[in-house]
Length: 316
Image (cartoon, rainbow, N blue to C red; front, side, top):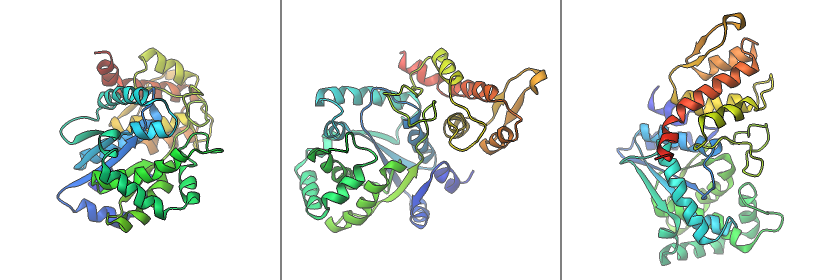
């Protein structure tokens, strides 16, 4: 796999591809992704984490913003609570392999309370309408039927994060797109460069609905082997390939981290098989060559292997 293919796999949008080709020609490259502190780091978060590991392999320096102040503004808890969660999340990121000399973790409050940072926030606040700020938050904010003023500050701060971290690429789920587009439009007005933006998909929860803590429809990176197998056994797995949560787990979590993914089953049900690509596996499922129960078992086996080091790390 060449560098461009590695960098762009499992993304839904690059803004823009020409800019990416230019960045890839640089001797040094950097990318940032920000995460609001969360009680559990689950497969939804892991989509962008896997992408960061692809980018690290391609030679990028990784900057992870542990967005404690953003979480506070978005009504996720007190500053003490979100700061504690941020430290726990850092251990989760390290557990799944996001660590090493080219990975830097930055606590939001370590840069966001700086006077120069706050002045840039105010400069941008003069230019961005309340309507644009609200629209940019609709996918990521809580209780957006009655948003608070603090949530209007949130996207502007995220724009300034990109500038102050001095990165080439802003990475996020596709739900971050509107905020990233604001950054491309308005950062140059305060003398900062417009970032290249890279977006990954938002995957479904195990029940086929939006993944969320309240639904309990996720697998955490800290889940036990037994918990992973039980959750996957109950997962929604329709005959269709589109929006199939089990296939999504294979595509975004198992195949990127395993060269060969085995399917183990009795001879009377077709015997064992091996797949070297997600596309090959999806085609076999679509053709009826793999039963849903076998697909779920195969996916559980792969996840157990992929997350083995994370479980060991979290239990230290």
